[in-house]
Amino acid sequence: MKFLYKLFRQDPNTREGIIATTSGLGIIVNLLVASIKVIIGLLASSIAIVSEGVNNAADVMSSLLTLIGTKLAGKHPDEKHPFGYGRIEHLTGLVISVIIIVTGVEMLISSVKLVFNPEEISISYITLAIVAVSAVIKFALGAYTQKMGKKADSSALEAVGVDSKGDAYASSITIISALVFLIFHVSIDAYAGIITSILIIRAGSEIIKDTIGEIIGRPGEEELAKQIYKEVKNTEGILGAADMMLHNYGPDRWSGSVNIEIDHDKTVGEVYQAIHELQLRIMHEYHVTMVFGIYAVDNDHEEVKVIRKSIGTFVKDQAEVKSFHAIFLDPKTNYLYVDLVVTYKLRDWDRLEKDFKEYMSKLYPDNEIVLTIETEFV
Image 1: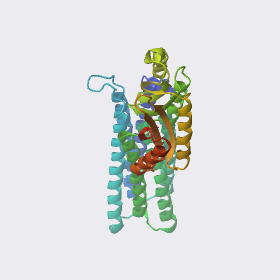
Image 2: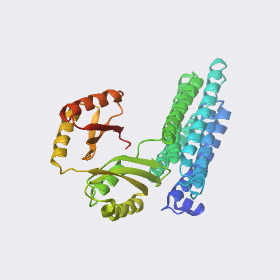
Image 3: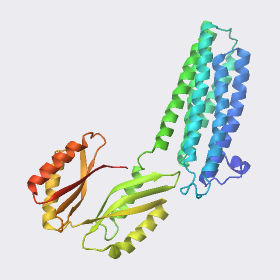
Image 4: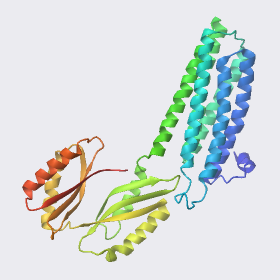
């Protein structure tokens, strides 16, 4: 690999260097394997082997797209895209998955045609050994590409790795088909081609499902959220934190928000410096641009302590309510504010609001209950 890093003039310690060099390796190996398989498949008149060769050729395009996508994703932010171009990598993964599916569909059509119009196969143990060696190479390449994809946090590179390992599994089916022909003189080549194409379509579908999920928007990374929550809650002047949102704009590019609780007797000016330092620390250490919302709470007030206990009693009987926070009793208006955090399984939010307000109104008839129901985003 050191030779490849020098050949492609890349730094092995950078994300772009890892992706570029791994993609380059994929292009070289897949070109070699594809050429060998297509030639062998044509000489042996084996649709299964030719199909695998065509799929390997498509893998060359996948590696090339990964390389191009990474380059484009690394562009600096501008007026049109102030958060940068990091999400281009997700689009690259989407294009790769479409290529995989189209290749699989074309192979499926060819294999089904061969079922009704079979052709004579000419294959040898030497040919079979070459296919087996290529399968081992593809599996090793796939495992390595997946490993580097995780190391570089590249979903596109991981997708290429999964596809490469899928090719190795498909090759095993081709080998079994060839062995059946050599030993029993029965051709199941077309059926092996069908199975291979189905596996390829399935792999492409899984990748497209994951990629679309990234584009639509997934929850923020749980481990990252835990680290930021820990930083926030350990900051002097902050009593608690909740409602964190994290939005990903590519590797190491995050924006987010979180609501923090401060003592209602303190002013923003009194806690500003601690919050400002916290914001800078999160930006530098976790690459997250964090915005804070502020709740004023009075946890030491005796009446609030009783209210908190009452709400806790209600929450215990609600399987779909995970927690509560942001309790604030406004002495001027008698408004009682509270937030309930619910699971995504809860469908009838209106019923929960009605039950909660009825429960609280019986205990605190002089207060106006202001309830916010929300889900967790990470």
